[in-house]
Image (cartoon, rainbow, N blue to C red; front, top):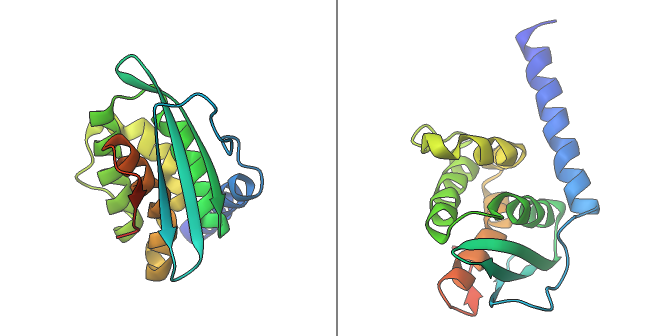
Length: 158
């Protein structure tokens, strides 16, 4: 087996993770009891997302979302909801910055070591850096989440 074979296997695995979360999101639910919510819209590709956040003391207790769009956007929202649970707002903002860097470049050399585990869970989305127009698809749910944490009602994919 060559290193190229290993890379292809990893890419196939990541693609399967994206397709699985895109087709069968685990957190695609409108929370009836929530503390904050925000919407994100990318009119260039038609992706739309709304996130709902319920806090548990000083951490994020639960995140739910509704999304319409491509598999990347939906998978990103689902993996995001899974990854930010039980994290503080500050940790979630750091995680967003690290994820955005990874989505743009494919790597995150400056990532905080404390974020190794959650970044690892998000790695299936690192491949979007090869398709610059898809970076916005992957980051849109995160922009909506950060808008919700900031008390804003809407976010863009910028």
